[in-house]
Length: 258
Image 1 (cartoon, rainbow, N blue to C red):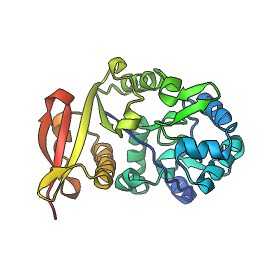
Image 2: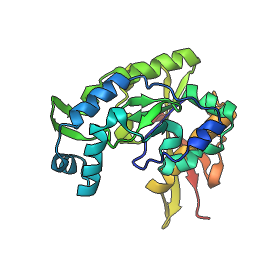
Image 3: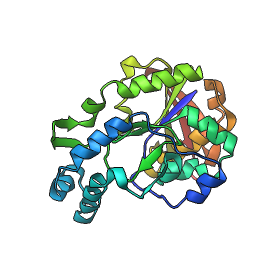
Image 4: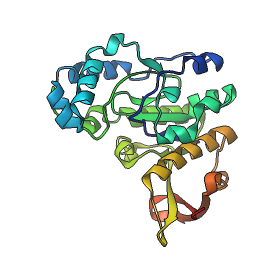
C-alpha cells in the first residue's frame, strides 16, 4: 500500500540533528532536472508578478524571488519528510518515527509538489513556494498540471510496481491530487474523507482533516498496512471508520465532539 500526501507552505530546516540521529542520508529527487528548470523560469518573474500570481504579500514575494534565484546554492535544505511543517506533517510527526519506519516510508510515502513533482521522504528539499494550482502567465508556462503531464503518475506506478503495492491511498488535497492522472493509475485508488461533528452535523473541517491525513499516513507506516480492511481499523484521535462511498471509492471516518 502506497500513500500520497500534499506538501506544506510552512518549512523548517532546523532539524539536522534529527536526520543525523536517524541516519538519514539525503537523496536526489526523481525530477531534480525539471525542478531546476522550473526554478530558473520562475526566477525570471519580478516580485510583483509572483505576488499577483501566487497571492503573496510583497515580503513573501521578495523572499521567493530570492529563493528561485538562489535555488542551486541555497543553504536552506533538508530531508523532505522533516522539512515540511504544516498540519499534515504535525499529524505525521516524522521525527518520532523509528529508523525502520522511516525506511518503510521512504519506499511507500509520496509527497506531491508543484516544484518537484513528487518527492520521497529522504529527498533533498530546497526552500521554495510554488503551489500546484498556480496559474503561470509567461516563460512558456500556463499551469503546473500541464508542465508535469504524466510524469507524476508514471513515477507512482513505477514505485507501486517495485513495492508490489496493490493500493494507492490518497491523503492529498484535491489541488495536488489533480496532478496525478487517475486514468493512467495502475494501483487501485483509495480516497479518504475525515468528518467532524460540529453544530449538529458532520462536516470536513480543513485544519482537522489535514492533521488526520498525516495521522493516517503514520498509522499505515507504523503498521505496514497492506489491505483495506486493516486500514478501516484506524482510530487515532477519536476518528472511526463509518462508511464507504462506493461511487468515489472513498473510506469515510467520523469523529464526534470530545
